[in-house]
Length: 456
Figure 1 (cartoon, rainbow, N blue to C red):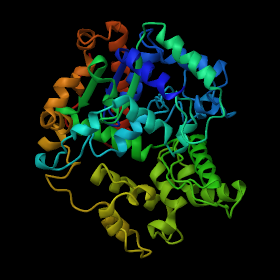
Figure 2 (cartoon, rainbow, N blue to C red):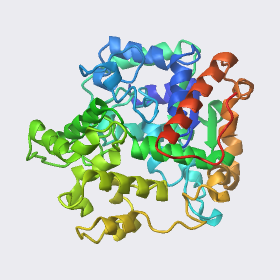
Figure 3 (cartoon, rainbow, N blue to C red):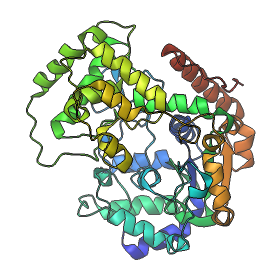
Figure 4 (cartoon, helix red, strand yellow):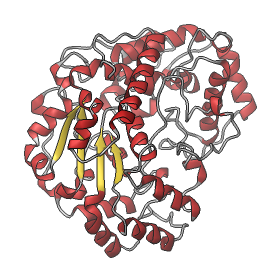
């Protein structure tokens, strides 16, 4: 789509976009999947079907979509994308804009999910960032460098325009010719996300009194991701080998994460050799269904030189237990070595390279104080998005941000009052199922939040 057409299309359709911003672990993936797959309220499924039919979206990027089989030959019960043991729901993808908004929410300084420890440090959105919003969006999509820009979007990044722009135009105009809205999810509302202005609908979710519950879910679902059955553990190792073979150093247990590809990567081990390396090391855990295998443990073993860990001197169970302690001691450990590169403070902490896991423990699990961004009982943690919007109240009021606490998500009437006409009975059944499975998954790894929502 040319720039002029894109700007006109955005202007004409701005009122059709709904944005849901939430913290990882808070059930946002499941909520977005429910709204777009189990209801007929949004256009997301129609877009995906049209893109698949026209061959615009590669099938291996649609593995999470209901009714479309995974590109692998795995049995459904062994498909980590669909059924992780942590209870984590399949990742919700925005294929219309190639997930640019959720990624911007993670990387942007001016985001409603800002983790500044003190109110005075919360950023004020510069007025110039709110100017010419659709041109900013066009330029952002056009200049993207990450591999996700290969996904279908109205504007392709760089030279990745191998798919027919005529077909993309057809889908865009089909959307324009109907009245259904399109759902976008993000981990923080940014100036880029607010490009739709007051015509769109924005939900900004904060944890409130259930912040500890959410952060425990985040620690489990995002950072630990426990697997219990042998074949499930084996598939986790196969995914680790897949990443190794193509040079991915950022390991998140998701096939879509390819942001840290090593340049000129030449693997020293074949898949058979690398998988055997994992199996030999993890054998005691693989053979015991009562011991979970955590993705972060696989992460460390995959990059043990970077972590300064001598895996020849530390057995897998000890390392696995230590990872558990580190994760829960901090809730947000940034244990992936690739993310350390983006955090000057943590880079400094990792200057030590001793082959002693205690050093890594000290580097990642140093004392948490009441002002720490991850302290779940602090008022700051409970109010993280609320404080941001209080400080940016001018933008909030102009755009019409709907501030919502986690417990309000359980109320179908709340969504109905704000324009999302869900079936109350079905919606409550979904939330109760999600909540029950989440509590069970937490209990299985000995996590018991002091305050959890009541089932309805």
